[in-house]
Structures are given as C-alpha cells and as structure tokens.
Amino acid sequence: MMKYDVVVIGSGFGGLACALLLSKAGCRVLVLEAHWQPGGCMQSYQRKGHTFDTGLHYVGGLDDGETLHDVFGQLGLLRLPWHRMDVEGTDQITIDGRTFCLAQGFDRFVDVLATDFPHQRQALRTYVGMLQGPDQDPSVNAWQWLDETFSDKLLIDVLSGSCLKTELRRESLPLLAFAHSQKSYIQSSWRLRGDSGMIVRSMVNDIRHMGGDVVCRAEVKELIEQDGRIVAAMCDNGERYEGRLFISDIHPAQTFALVKESKVLKNIFRRRMTMLENTYGMYTFSLVLKPHSLPYFNHNKFVYEGGSVWDEDTTKVMLSCRVPEEDSDDATLLDLLTPCDKDPMTLAETVIPGLRDMVSEQYVSTPRTWQRFTHTPDGSAYGIRKDCRQSLLTMLSPRTPLSNLLLTGQNVMLHGLEGVAMTARQTCDIIMRNHTEYLRI
Ligand SMILES: Cc1cc2nc3c(=O)[nH]c(=O)nc-3n(C[C@H](O)[C@H](O)[C@H](O)COP(=O)(O)OP(=O)(O)OC[C@H]3O[C@@H](n4cnc5c(N)ncnc54)[C@H](O)[C@@H]3O)c2cc1C
Image (cartoon, rainbow, N blue to C red; front, side):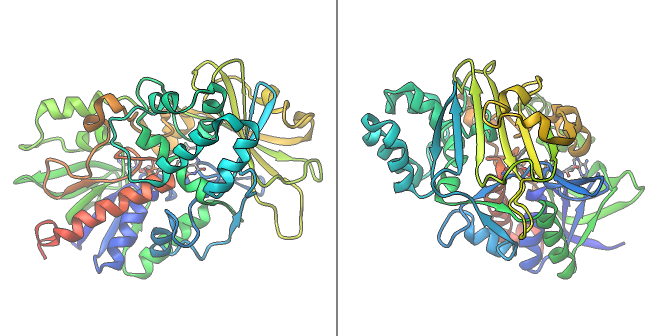
C-alpha cells in the first residue's frame, strides 16, 4: 500500500492549488474527488456540443505585481489564454435604469465614478486607499465602513453592485471579505478564452507530471484517527488511502463528520462546526444564442431593480458572456446569474432588449444542482457566511485540533479564486514551515 506525503480531500481550486504547490515542494500527493470529474465549482459541462462554465466568469489581478500574478505563476496558470476585459467599464452596474461603470486601475476607477459623483471624489480616494492598504481587521463591518465614508447612498450601491460574487449582508459582512472581492478586479480583470475546465486540466496535468495522483469517483467516507493524527482516508470505491498529512478542501462540518471516532475532537467543537451558517445559493441560466443575434460584450452587466443592492428582496441579475473564437465578434454563450428563484429574463431584457428571442437553448442550474455536483451544503455559492461580529468563529484558521489535518478552500477564510488561492498558499506555508512536525520527514 502506497503511503502519500499528503492526501487532499476534494479537487476544488483550493485542493488542486495545495496539491500543486506541495508537489512542487517535493511532496508525493494524492487528491481524492467524489465526482467523476475534478474541479468542484470550476468544473465545466457539455450539452449538444457546447461547453458551459459553472463557477468562473472572470478573475482579477493577473498583471505583473498584482494580487494573483505570483500565485497564478506558481500554479502554471499565467500561460492560459487570458483575455483582458474593458478597462473603462469592466463591470457595468444598472440600478433602476441608470448605468455606472467600474473601471480598471485605481486612478481610472476614481475618475470614471467621479464623473457621476463629483461630490464624492475624496471619499472615492479614501475607498481605493483602503483597498490598496493592509488587510482590514475582520471585525470591521463593511456596510458600516461604507456608510461612514460615503454620504451618497447610490454610490454605495454602485460600488457594491458587482457583488453578486459576494453575499451582501449589512449586519455581518466583514470589510475584509468585501475588499477582497473588489481589489483584484480593479487592478485588472480577465476572462478565459475557453472554458474554466482549462484551469482544472492544466493543474491536474501538472500534479500528475510531478508524480502525484488525482483519483475521481473516490468519495471519502471516513478519516481514521490514531493517537490524535489522521492515518487513512476510506473511500466509497472500497480503497483505503494512507498519508502523513491530510488537507480538506470540503466544508469543515463535513470534514469533521468524516472523523467518526476521535479522542481529540470535542463535541462542543463538532457542534460549533455544524452550526456555521452558509451563504445563499445561485441560479444560473446558461443561454446558447442564435448565430449573429448579439455582439460580444467585453464586460459584465449587473442589473438591480426595486431596492438597494444590499437588500435581499431586490431583483438582481449578472450577465456574463464567453469570449468568442478569434474569428468571431458574436456572443454565443451568455450566463444569467441570480440568487433569486425568479426567472431573471425580464430584468436582463432591460439591458439587452429582445434577449429572449435570441436564445436557441437554455440550461438552468439551481442551488440543488450545486449541492449534487459539489456536495456543498445547501448548494451555498460562497461557503460559510463570514460574520464580522464573530470573525474568529466564521473565518477559520487552516489548522484543526488534529495535528496533521489542515483545511483549505472557500469555507476557510475568503472565497473566489483570489481568496481560495491565498488560503491555499497559507495552508501550504503552514505545512512547509512545520514540515518536520507535519510530514515527519
Ligand atoms: C455561480 C458561481 C459563480 C462564481 N464565479 C466566480 C468568478 O467569476 N470568479 C471567481 O474568482 N470565483 C467565482 N466563484 C467562486 C469560486 O468558483 C469558488 O470560490 C472556488 O472555486 C471554490 O473552490 P474550493 O476549493 O473551495 O472548493 P469547491 O469548488 O467547493 O470543491 C470542493 C470539491 O470537493 C469535492 N468533495 C466534497 N465532498 C467530498 C468527499 N467526501 N470526498 C471527496 N471529494 C469531496 C466536491 O465534489 C468538489 O469537487 C463562483 C462561484 C459560484 C457558485
């Protein structure tokens, strides 16, 4: 029986990132994935010759010196065909019929918004200063900070308008999480020319190339503890996989439920993990458009009607297109994303009139679909709900009470590719700093 240095549970972006970084550091790694294909929220799927993305529409901060540049370089992802989005308006926010642009580059970002909100130029400078400064204390409340900084409430809605990639909650969202969902996209914003499966295939190939294994259809059903350490993962394929160190890329409540018999995990700790609240789930309407019906648009459109961007019952939708093939200017695949369980087409048509007549095929995924294909509790889109009032309880450390079990992924600290990449790096740093203890090398 092969004993691995590191066994990773779950092949989401965080699991693959840890596996790749540790492979590069010389570890023999194994990734165990429940689903038939790797990638978790990054997986793509095919219908009638089209490949659809699930949880990736754009990323930020890939240019030299920006947030994701180094880690994407380490992960071999800078070589993928990234396509820069409109610098003057990457995210176009339409609120009750008025459209505003969020631009790339901090100075341009301020200048573009200051044309609509000249009286808030100084506050906008304070805002970008905050984003470029050191990380915020996780106990600072995002809404409160914005409310104290901006006198114009419409501008707060505009700044938060690209936040269908974060769950906005006035009472609980930490400024740290809000800032991380904004900063890298203002630095620079990119779409892939191709599907998000390219990222997954690139990482899996590199892990295998360095001697690691990625095994699908291998759902971990139990983690076996001996003397305060995990020694093996038991899978539903009947295999037992042994390792020196285990990293879990799945929800902490699910992770600790896998340790059925433990001398280390206290009931109160287990209860605390199961009581963590999760963010809402998303509905995605993946549309195939009729040929030449809609020119490609190189930005995201976010549309809101009937209330503040921060209100749960405001109707909202994000529209994002796939970059077309080199020889075409037409949009062929368009996603409509919304946390609401109502058909978003009517709202989408306020920014693309006649859209429903352009559609030739439509595929819908709901939070239940996410639950089924990524095992995420409640089909939650962004993992555990981070709460500035209980930051230590909801923004977890990668360390666990079990000495050789660490956590990674969007449930731990921050979500999105940026947050998950940062967390993976932190998980791996902890391991490399303590490799004698963790790997007993
Ligand atoms: C609709 C939507 C749109 C998004 N758009 C963007 C975007 O445009 N840009 C961006 O940066 N981020 C985006 N995100 C967020 C981003 O996709 C996620 O934050 C990130 O991919 C999460 O990665 P993860 O490593 O935490 O794990 P996950 O992707 O949750 O993967 C966990 C994996 O573990 C597997 N698993 C679960 N249980 C077991 C078990 N017992 N044994 C073995 N395997 C198991 C699952 O099958 C899954 O493959 C989006 C998310 C959603 C939902």
